Image (cartoon, rainbow, N blue to C red; front, top):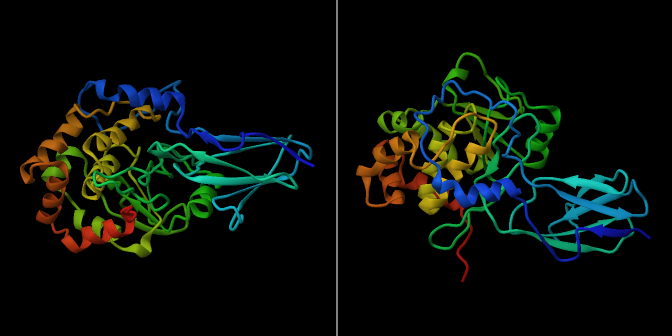
Length: 328
């Protein structure tokens, strides 16, 4: 009989690291370090990648090489299976605020719950700064669905996704569409390293976006097409062009303004040099650029999108795809 050791039964498990939680507490104190040169990013030397999630480590006694099974239902339908080594398996990329059941061979069944704390960080070998748009709560009490819309860094120019990373993207996350926002990829890349549908639509960041939102309607047409999901959108670092699009999408979904800023600021702990903060020249360029369009961020984003060809029907389809139903 196999004896389960950890996690303990009915545990509540954090998926954010201590460094991520510490950053969360103080991100609003960050100050600007000048304009971000988002076309020429540099890697921080000697600094670990802070954008990786905290893993869950499963341990047991008995058959050291037994298979760990994990599912989000007690019947273990569609369970993930992980071969053990020395009575242990390390697993990443759980969804937040979700109950899971697990067992090893002929062991008892245990369950645990993951902490309700967005964002949902994602580990993808060979790329960085990947996270799920899902998990954030909206101002009207709804939640953005997990497992549909992912943001992150590039996979094939300055950093290179591995076979293990491709497996995570395609087989674990189920990515169907690679939405590439890099203008520098034009004439260089014509297909996705994931082998999925590739949409190359150069995008701008911050005040450049507000002044000239190239491909805005085309990008939102893709986001309004349910058949494109799960979808991964990225630029170079998943930081500035990606951050701009994430801000606009999150705003029309109704994510609170402070959370939109926090999600943007979390890029500061990735491998890319430069502090991203709400008071910085970049974000303020975006905020001031859309400010004339309304009295709050949601209204400003919606009216800005309308003024540049994005229809109410498209925005409503995006909300229908990405938002959970309201709880009674």
